[in-house]
Length: 243
Image (cartoon, rainbow, N blue to C red; front, top):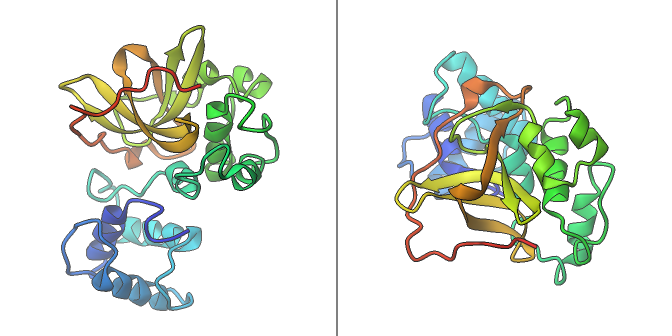
């Protein structure tokens, strides 16, 4: 995982909270951000280099909570770990990157099969969630079939328009599932990060009229929720069929 596999702005805000970063919150992992990461890791007894992996993210979230307890909000909430996980395979295509994508889809211990042959949005969602929040209890419907997108309308607990929400949509007689990363109130569209979107892991705009549910893992603190970023979808391509 690289510095760009998650929200660099959160990283910068967390480092600023700890007094290690004095630069702008611009989402660019430049020299100041990298130096602050190195300083933090050195203080934690970790190898002092600017690689940011799961251990660093966990230590950073714990340090921020200890420094400023109960202050999680839009500026301090850690990146949802399932977004970090799916970020590792952003851009992979079901044909071009078939072997790498298949390896990731079965890294949680099971898989639907070849993504070039099966609709795999549910496979991508459950892989990211199972790897990121493995202690999350699954509803019976997902236990029986973790690849049917509409079943994710029962995942975890209900939530509002929050960043990283598990978003379940209709798609004809079937469905689609991904993670909400943006919203445009003017066009009433959600920006969804997920698999099987133009045959890839990518972000796509979906109409809110198709939304079934927004859900949040029971085992990931609700205090870490932050509002969906407001974005402009005007002129963007609207996804209507994620098969």
